[in-house]
Amino acid sequence: MRTEWLVNFYALMSFGLETTVTVFRTDGEIVARNPDLASQIGKNNRNGPLFQEQLPRSPTGVYWARSMLDGKERLAAYRLIPDLNLVVYTGIDSGSVFAAWQSRSLWFVAEVALTTILVLFLLLWGAGMIRREHLVQKRALEAEGAARQLDADLHQARRDTLTGLPARGLFLEIAEGLRRSAKKKGAILAFLYIDLDGFKGVNDRHGHEQGDKVLRTVAEIMRRTTRDGDLLGRLGGDEFVICLSGHAPDVRAVATGVAARIIKEVRDLDLGVGCSIGIGLTAEDCDDLACALHLADAAMYRAKKAGKGAWSIHEPAQEPCLSCNSEMVA
Image (cartoon, rainbow, N blue to C red; front, side, top):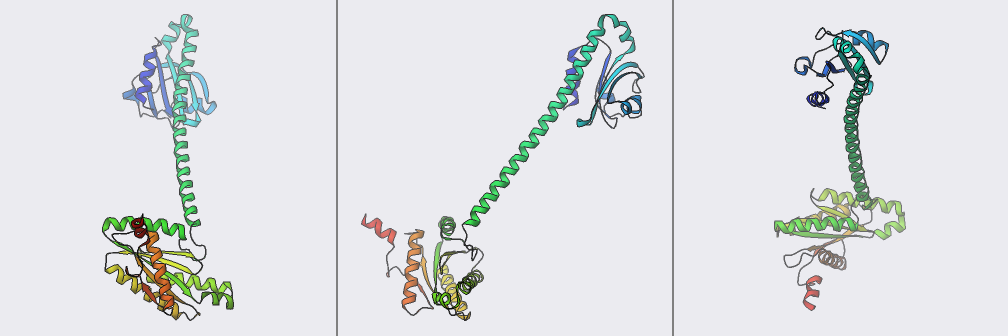
């Protein structure tokens, strides 16, 4: 609250007596006063009778006092407001009190009470507004935190619990963002469709615990052999997928190099499994994700038919793009 506003508000009431209204902090410092605000604000009255004698006896009262600020004797009333750390003081010059005693005694009590109530109301109203604002800010922060946590929980729920990799739905959602970004940069995407060879035999001979260990190990190999910006996912069972972004022909070389390293490292595990990898690329004339994944899957099956433990990359002559083919038929 601006102290000038409080002083001007009080002056508008025009009680007609030589009255003084002062608001102190509980350490005695003046924060508002009428009259002489400019010369009195910031002064300290902690050694005066109000703080040394009256307040220690009672948080509210009426007494005769000689002001340490201007030397005038006044009939004063005060009230401590502990919640706001303030003391409100009102005083009437002794000459005015006796001169107008008979005609204004009742009015004086009412006016002082009204003034005190109004001052208290304004102070409490201001404090309430501050508290409400803090509460609104707190609730907004809590709601924002809850929303972030919910988003994180939902995001985590869409990850494969065994390997920590994105599951199919989350993988496709992130891959769509990579596709839009690559299109703006004039880049293309390469999808590596990975299927483990001999995985069913591991489960049958050694149990699902050993099978789960193999899946986690393969996921770790994929993390080691890819770049920070590449996207990994588990489609289900023993099928994994990697999405790489780059400019042709570089991305083709990167994709085949990653495929070769993964095949070698899985074979070197000596756990009775290998892997076959198919590679499909998006192109300028078709950047449909479902189509690229299908072509990568088809290339993976060609690698399996060729003897397993190898990679195969889709070439346009091998199989047309399904999306483009359907559009041509339509």
